[in-house]
Length: 273
Length: 355
Ligand SMILES: Nc1ncnc2c1ncn2[C@@H]1O[C@H](COP(=O)(O)OP(=O)(O)OP(=O)(O)O)[C@@H](O)[C@H]1O
Ligand SMILES: [Mg+2]
Image 1 (cartoon, each protein chain N blue to C red):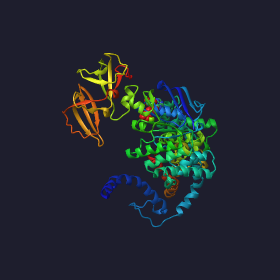
Image 2 (image 1 turned 90 degrees about the horizontal axis):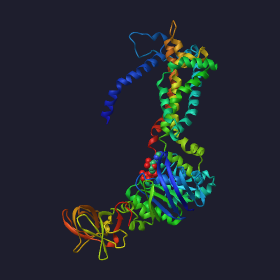
Image 3 (image 1 turned 90 degrees about the vertical axis):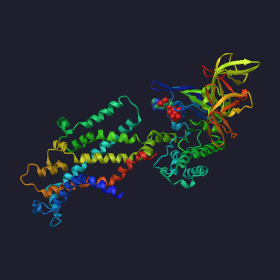
Image 4 (image 1 turned 60 degrees about the vertical axis):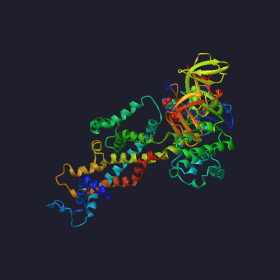
């Protein structure tokens, strides 16, 4: 047993190194004094744990504003996508209607298209709507892009919730709405949480659309803000960039670890009989 | 409690007809079992009575009320599902009290009813457990309890015991029957297990391919099956079918097989002389003949414990017989058999109808 798991970790170790290396560099660079950034040969040690990097960075890069923007866009777009996806997924998993197959194929096909292909069209659409350079343009486009995925994902989860349960509720005297609220939705919570996490992370990390739609720096989301610290600058403050990157990955890590119990429960959902 | 009347009911999924021309009158207090092979439409019929499936043709009445367009929740029926369909996020108590809470009954009354039902079903120690923490048999009881607290007009069961092991199935079978004898709620019970059907039913409805083959009391169907399908479906081991032609001599009737052997049948049969027929005889009605019996060759002997089942061939056709005596037959032995003519059924070889 132990031997086996050691063997598996050995096989996995190259992968682990590749994944962890950037994080290591990020962590070390974020806490180093500026002078130690480019020592040669490179080392993993640092002379002091410089928290001040974060404070300086926060002010210099206008991090707070970007964080708020990112939160606003990610939370609202995830909410919007979920509110629209849940009924759609429910209908897909429970009802027969004409064009159902075509609809599902369509959902899948939208997933094959990269947002970059559509960026120009979307930009012109936002111009027409008067939404360019507002965060709401991102809320709308992120929600739209996420929906294909969230509908698909929710639909496959919903299909694992036995229809019998709702039928039993009807026979017990519940109307459609009551059975939905008291029987179906409580069982679907894990699935919805998992889907919401993915939607949130997608929105949080999105870059191309944010770069296109937002013109002024007060509206930048975190990825764009961090990018602007690197791109087209004569001198790059790497320790600030790394500190910002680290703070930007933090909310995702927190959301993920908080919701991961749902992730596991969601995956075990089919086992409940 | 109420009667259930099903008149000329049919069901089509798209262009596929799965039920045709179903007529059943179920009386108040009756326990009716729908039985038939897989896919014959038993569940569909039950779900139409429950209101979970629309009625394509005909009329379903519960009591005096036509319920074709009445939604399930207003039909005042209770149903036990094959996989129990317990709400996984509620405790046993929550599951059983759900319908009462929906009806906004006062809390003391809910408590009283749930505890009464739980006591009946030996569930009191398990009320605070969630379905996941219950064994299959306990889940089955909770599903029963959920139906019981309702005091509904009609109980519907869709193969409620098929997920239990053989022993528990027999226990629960008896419990459900005892419960019905006490409560007398009109019940419709779907199963594909003919022993369940025989033991539990006041009346059995035998279905096949979306139609009703025969309706009747268990022993009537067993002793006088209306056709080959019913004859073969009820009884285990199943009835022997031996082909031949009808003959009558000196007031006695025979079915003559190809090898010229005369199988005794009741002279009361309506079959015409020389008509191709099938003689149906149950294995337990076959006995060892002293002399002048039907010559057969033993193929296989299977002791089951209470009985010995002997598979034989008779004039090139296969059959089986069941004996309680401990005969020491070996494969290849030649044995003489006989049976009382009135135990044998005669069926039309073409239509399968009993003559
Ligand atoms: N929703 C549906 N759409 C199309 N056909 C269906 C549907 N439900 C059932 N059928 C068909 O109707 C027929 C009867 O199904 P039903 O479930 O009533 O059979 P059953 O007698 O209960 O069988 P089993 O003993 O296997 O449960 C089957 O041929 C099945 O394929
Ligand atoms: Mg069925």
